[in-house]
Image (cartoon, rainbow, N blue to C red; front, side):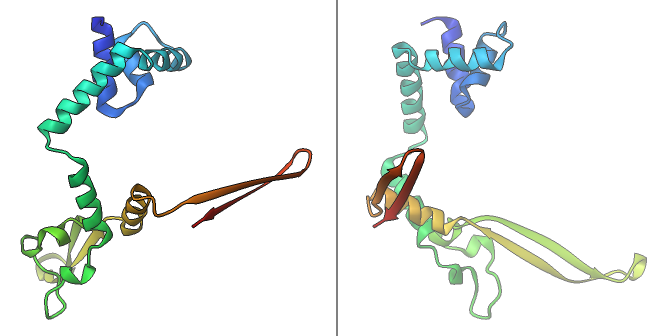
Length: 171
């Protein structure tokens, strides 16, 4: 494997943009179309595939990423309960008081301070907290697909030339 191929692989692993990675590894290539075609060929190279797969596997081990762990995190999001974000009096809990399952559904918190008055007469009257949550529907869909719960049935009917009816049914 050449040094340029290794550079391509390492760049490709940053964002999986093969065209960009090719242009970095082979700076003389200026056209996107050329880089796109050449990078596609390069990705089919057995040595390149082996190098990329080996690097991904090492990174997966280093980060302790497993299929079980990914599925567990998707399940946390899919089955997270928004009620656990609040205390008994209806106020938002402090982030450090959330259990791991509840914290997994939170992707961000934005706090805005609210004031009344101007200048030296300005006084804080409260604050607003906005909680952004992970996409529960997407997590459920991904889990359902992983476990084969959704079977799509595709029917293609062609009664007349140049006219096609396609019906997709999810069971």
